[in-house]
Length: 170
Image 1 (spheres, rainbow, N blue to C red):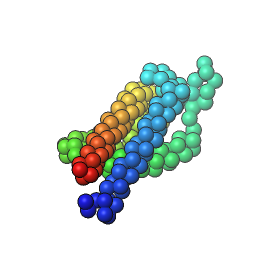
Image 2 (image 1 turned 90 degrees about the vertical axis):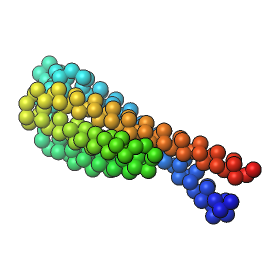
Image 3 (image 1 turned 90 degrees about the horizontal axis):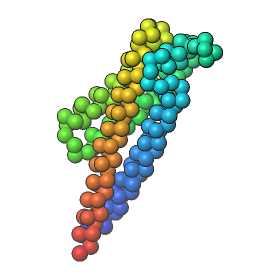
Image 4 (image 1 turned 45 degrees about the vertical axis):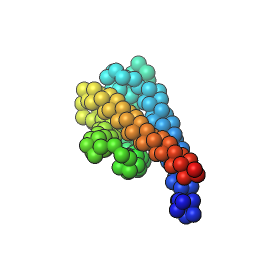
């Protein structure tokens, strides 16, 4: 009864709905990230090398230091905020602490590795193209796993909220 008097039940349902809408938005961001990658290159080292080092066949120039710095500046902030938000939401789930630690570390490491991969190809050695591909795939899979874990927890919480509110009415 206290939930209905204080309005706490409605706030929990509203917060849950808002978080689920945010996660839907992040799922679209995840899809667009993959589409942007595959618009520029594919999962072959040659395509990654051509993107970062330029290609005579495609008449493309190597990525400039300044251009890469601008992209990194934006990505480091935005990916940091995204990963912080998603891992924070995951901390509030009822999944095991081991899973939370493992998945948090994986998503942070893969985000940094993905950003570093382009720099390593451009200014290190072309063989870092394998690293860039692996980092991109790891980032996409770890973000997908993180989204899945948080969405699953939110849907479970939503059904518990509905069950408890229907039980309260009886």
